[in-house]
Structures are given as structure tokens and as C-alpha cells.
Amino acid sequence: MNKIKTGILIVLLAAVCFNSYGQGAKSLKINEVLIKNTENFQDDYGQRNAWIEIFNSSFASVDIRSCYLTNDKRVLDPNIDAPTRAAMMYPIPKGDVLTNIHPRQHLLFWADGEPNKGNFHVNFTLDSIGSNWIALYDANGVTLLDSITIPANIPANCSYALVEDGIKELGWEIKGINGKFVTPSTNNKTLDSNEKVDGFKSKDPSGAGMAVMAMIVVFSGLLLLFISFKLVGNISLILAKRNAMRASGITDKKEAKEKAIGTESGEIFAAISLALHEYQDNVHDIEDTILTINRVKRNYSPWSSKIYTLRQTPKN
Image (cartoon, rainbow, N blue to C red; front, side, top):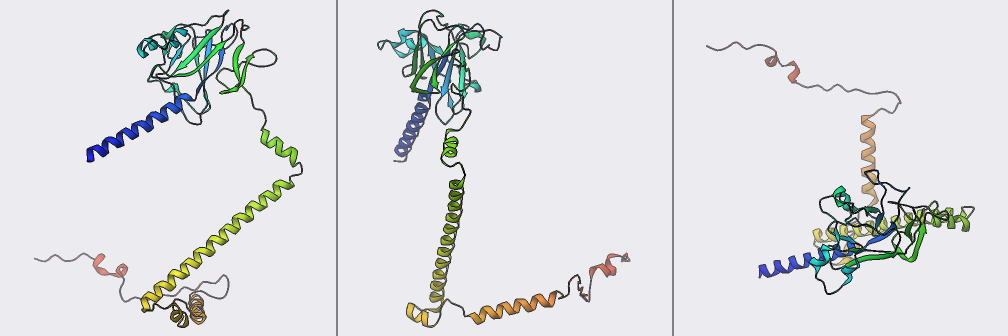
């Protein structure tokens, strides 16, 4: 029975992990592609080649290792098996920490056909004149994560990119012309202002609304604290009365109320306060800047003991 439960637990954990991985991989998007590179971004070798930018659209890190990049449309044939399809694509190697894409960040691959230069140099090149189809496949070699067809005759040093990172609904555009800059490994849309802040400024130019809102928040917090302390105090009193009734052997609440079980009179608190006051007055002086040092008399002190300072005569 325990083996069956353990097996079910392992299967459930594997399913959750697989589902989490799948959801992460599905957030990877082809974000920007530059076909003809003569004056644009350079790779680690100082060379200019076509590049493909992948964007992580999720708010969690995603490792792109073991996924596949390709420009070979033959992989779309549903009749070929996964190993054959994988052999037609570039497998992104494992063991490189740089394949882990942080939330809302980018990763660049160089389409130079020289994978021996590093993990981010794919084994295919792009057509600088005609159209190009690029696809990103999951690690299983079957699931198509994303694909894009770049139109032909894209001007040199211009990229084909999403208007806004990872959002295909807004469409694609050509960057590098009409005042739009190519953005390798960075956001396609540069945000130089906060739309929410600007909107709030336009609706509340004097700041009165912000001041009122701040005061409401502060006083609401204070009110919640008052209610919380009040409830805690009432609960404490109820528990104290219940414990006092239990200790006195009384079960009737009316009788406990008549005998004031669990409540202390004001005279007791006054006596305690007076005792504390007298104690404080006896220890300290009433006058300012005057200290009273009372000598403590002891019959015996180890500091004056001769047994620690005199050498004893050894016995024969």
C-alpha cells in the first residue's frame, strides 16, 4: 500500500514539474531578427552576422537549453519522427549558465552557420535577399513554441521586430528606419516615461487627490490597528474570566459576575501603583544631579580573604 502511495506521489510530482517546465518554455518568443548585418551589432569575435533575438515573456526565469532553432521548413512535416526532426535543427547545448533567461529579458543567437564558435552560434544562415522562416521548438523536438516568417528585401542593418516585446497582437515592424532604432538584447519599445504617473499628473495637477488618498490610507491603517487591539483585549479578558471561573469552580456566568470573578478592583491597582511609587522614591533622590551611594556591609568578602593571598605551610 505504501509503495502504491509513493508511486502516485512521484507521478504527481513529475506531472507538476513537467507542466511547470512546459509553461516556462511556452513563454519564449522570437522577438527580433536582423538578416543583413554590415554596420550593426558584433559578436564576440568582432564579426557582423545575422542574429535572432529570443525574449522571455514570463515573470520567471526560463532555461532555453535543449530547445531547438531552425529555418528548415521540412520540420513541419507531421509524418517525420522526433529524432529525424531534431537532426534537422540546431540543439541549444546544455551546461551553459547563460542559457537561463531572466524574467522579461533577451538572449541573442548568431545565424552564421558556425556552431563551433560557441553555444550561441547556430548551424544555419539566413537568406539576405529572400524571405526567411525561423522556428523555435521545445526540448522534445515536437512542440512548436514560436515561428515567424521574415519578408524579403529587408534593408541592410534593419531588423524585423515586434512592436512591443513578446506581444504579437501589436504586430511587427521594421526597425532601423523612420527614427526607429535596432535593439539587440534590449527592449523593442523604449519607455522613457511612466504612463500611469503621467495620467495621474494630468488628472490631479495640484496633488490634492494624492494628499487625501494618503491621509485615508494612514487613518484606515490606524483604525484597523485600533480594532485589532480592541478585539485582542476583549478576547484576553474573556479568556481570563473563563480561567478564573474554572479555578474558582464556578460555572454560572451570572454568579461569576456578581462575585466579580476574573476582574480586579481599582483599589488593588491603586495599591500596586503606590507601592511602585514608594519603591522608586526610596531608591533615587528627589533632587536633580545628585546620586546616593549606599554602602553595602558584608561580613565576608573574597577580596579580603587571606587564603587567596598567603602561601600555606605544607604539611609533613
